[in-house]
Length: 429
Picture 1 (cartoon, rainbow, N blue to C red):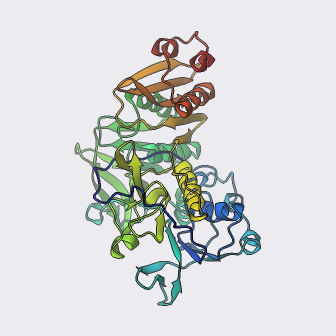
Picture 2 (tube, rainbow, N blue to C red):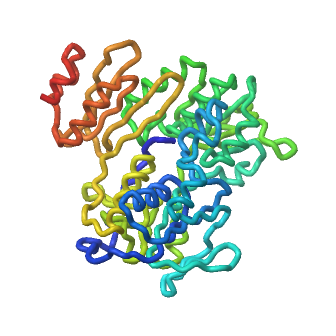
Picture 3 (cartoon, one colour):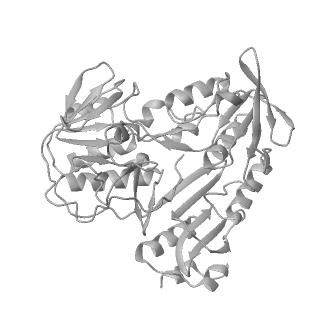
């Protein structure tokens, strides 16, 4: 889950040019959400010596923690939960950060500058930050999505429930061949489950990666015993005594299943903002400083929509959550530097590390470079002749080189990329 899923949006009505003027505020900051972006915002403000009161409102019952390992090392039992915490409880007291757990927010009153909590009480803010993340899409109840044994994976509670189910010899059906589904497949095979992945599109990773990347990842999964069925959708789930036992697929075939995981994308948690009259468009619309259509309200992370080269997008990644939150913190503390995303992502599957630098939106050409050792490969993306991204499969040198090229804005020579005997460092010369 430490990867990109970005959705381009058409031009959105309100513009935010020159919105960041004298917005430096020192009153109470209330942060709704207690995930990666929320913690990064609070921590960055304290590192900037900003002493304003901060209150974090988290719906879960645990301190802020890393989510990517939940579906990997935590689910495998290789990492205890305390190792996932960003900071121990003492850090919050030492840094004058009040954190309220099990405290979902019901509404925002922008006129009164208050948020109403689930118990009816309110808390006042001078500045509000919305870092509510996203929620996985669930399979519809009309096709059996409410049966026992059907899961999504997003938070600790999801991982804890799933861990009880993941036993050797059980049959797992994964709906969706994106990174979430493929990572779940890798973990399940490691635990000894029989795994089938179905994908409605022509191929796995259709929305987020080139065919060459998909081909390489498919071969890896098939080599580990995963059954992958592309151009195949879910018709309905079949249950007995309220629990899933099988699935009927779009081609009329039946697959036995003890467990089903839905990896069919997420929805931005923008409902609070929308109900409060803040502009949304599949996410909360923000400018380059994280400011929403209300100058007193910021948004960041998976729930935020912002401009990328003339398009409105939402990035679902650890990198964006941290960097966007830190840029917003700097703006709150009086800075004037806008957020300029430099996307990077990763996905661990079996002993394979897929590292991605850049954002391949709108690519029209790819160049494939064999790596220096067996099983390594890199796919380089271009759009109208410009280098925009690289996928590196077990090839750290290609990832690092591609990332540096993107940072300095250089388009490398395609012939050098394609020639495995050439030194990657020549691309930076």
